[in-house]
Image (cartoon, rainbow over all chains, first blue to last red; front, side, top):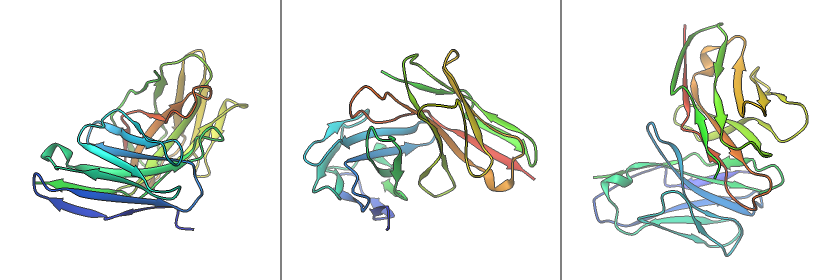
Length: 113
Length: 115
């Protein structure tokens, strides 16, 4: 039981490049989330997926797209990376309304030059 | 919409001293409340949570938090900290009756335990 896994762990991009961050969970959770963490800003929700086939914007969705590929996988895409997107990205999953506890992946540290 | 305020961004404390990390939330209706901990270079882990029942909840490593509805607070305490408690701590809240809305996190409190 691996929990929530994220790939890659580290990535350096040039401005304008695109990339996809991958997230998978093996806990049969319905809901999945993408956050970014920046110093002094805490965790900010980018997008979430309450269930397979649905996605919703969070607090800071601009510049990102998501795909809920199936119940296990939820990917985050940066179409044209900007230096402001330099951050640590976390994926999480939960069974909502049962306990609302979210389980987090180890994070992806992204630097955009 | 719910909001969470963690009143201290950084808390330095000497080893074996007590500590309190403060958390206030915005709503006075029913809530679920959480404390998460993030050790350096890791993801967040659940430390403890309040869903209902006893207002005092405890973690396995000696932390406790008390739900105070009248003051809309959920402060985290430990009577004697260890070096290994050095981490960032996040308070979070959810509304049990709002459907599938995500947790709302505070900005975090960085606890530094000094030897």
